[in-house]
Image (cartoon, rainbow, N blue to C red; front, side):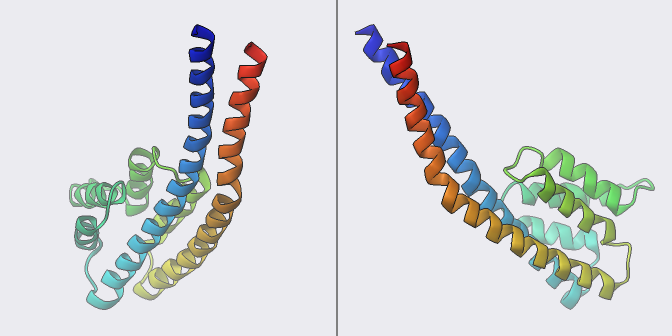
Length: 172
């Protein structure tokens, strides 16, 4: 009886681990799409309304889901209280604190940090061009993440179940 319960627990936990890895892939795709939406909104605020960055961040933060809403809101607050720190430094600090627990890969966060270096530093046209370039790169990352999710989700789930069965057989 105890062996049967233990076997079921091992199988369930291994299956759960596979499902967790699968959810991480979906989460990354979703967060990359949210990031794309955020950059499009920021580009619109800068291009059409010529809103100053702190106001643009606050305006967009209200419309964004977490973690990007709090990222932008805190960034706007820190820019208002800035004591000589540039936007690039504040942007990177907020990425480290607000976006480190997301499904985004380190490369995704580094690419986003690179965008923060040019915002507020260059003239309007260069900022918009930098955002366009970032959006193109982001679109490639989204496609890659979706392809990886399609191929690896079923693999992770199958490996979770197979690994659980293997462990049950090994221990029984």
